[in-house]
Length: 551
Image (cartoon, rainbow, N blue to C red; front, side, top):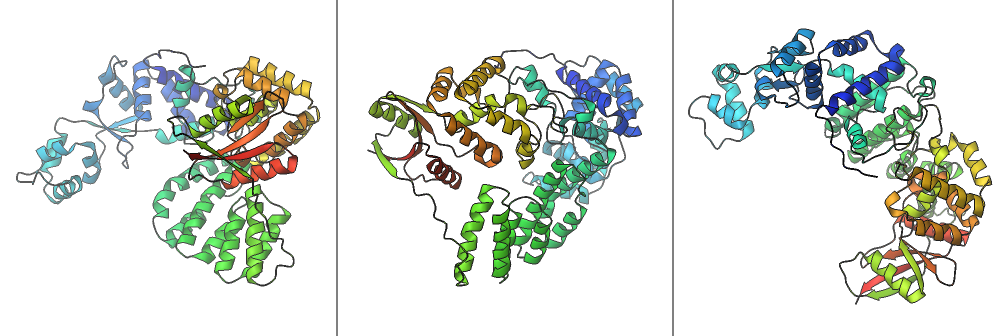
């Protein structure tokens, strides 16, 4: 659990070294000559120069064609003893360029508005906004530039593009940074130990690295492109990386970006172009969007074919439910419903509780009321109980050494955790574990894992929500058949099914248990909650829905 730890002043340098050393030790043969030269050059620097370089690499700076820009006079770091010498050392090594040739517009963001006014021509109105001030300076003579630069050295950071490759190899993405180390060092996270052998790491070729970097380049362009027109969106779509055999992670990421581009084309009423992009996507909701587009374009027959295709091989439950509803409605408009059943949504019986308003959460109030009325113990669990017990029961399988599952020592979950591949790649282990399920085996494994792993990060386990009292009651009262069906459903689509579970679990003094979904005034059941209630009804799992009204 969290502890109070004071970090060393240059903790960031230790973390940086750990990262680059890890990548070089495992990926040397995949790194370019330039990337390896960058690593060796950095290692040859003195400690102060390394500290300064990592500090600047961690800062955003002002973007320019010469590299991220910094004002030399604004640099100040207490842990760097000889800052001017460190700057000179980095310049000599080529990791910084002092006063690179720049166009005037690139200089302006480096200075404050007050500094720009002071350097500008006399008579500029003080009411000018920043953009107006910059335009006025660019339209005037260049004296302002000479004044700003008279006593100010500018530094352009070099080599950042090489570090991108190191980050990608270590994290598997370019969204994370060295903060992960800080969370570990502060004791906020403890990570499971798992195998990181070279042959099991995700990147096995330079082409993979190249395609991932291309993906992140496209992702960076996407925000601006999505605000543009259809031609720009299609141009970006044509630049997306190609799929690589066996690399499902890259395929999923590219598909997500392609779905975004296609959805924007839909909004721009470019339906044919959107449909073309959706056809190249292998994950939901591509087929759902295509069915909707088919109806909009006056082709209900195609929409029904797509719904049939989904029903024959649904990729998740939400997609299947859509195909049932949308297929029936489309067939009904065509007066052709003989092959389409009318899906009946779950209609749970609502029980009304009239309670006085209170600062407490409505779920907590309801739990207290239920415990009183039913004479028992009621816990507020929401999604934590069943997910948590599953996480404890399959802990070793979750962190098993599956090729490509782990990039570095700081992962809460394997990289494929939220994908259909998570279950498929461990199918035999999961099936064996479910076969072994019995009341004694479940309780023994869960309680042993709880004691052994307490506080270690697991994507299914919220430690603060799992008390020993709750676990004991749940494992004693819930029949093993219910655990098995719950586990099977969760594992079947862990991304969608780990949410939407009931708020409360009631353990009456007379025995047994009951799941309780609470809805406050104005609240209503969400689709994932309705699907869970339908499942409970089919499995004879005791449940009810309580609607709270204020007295």
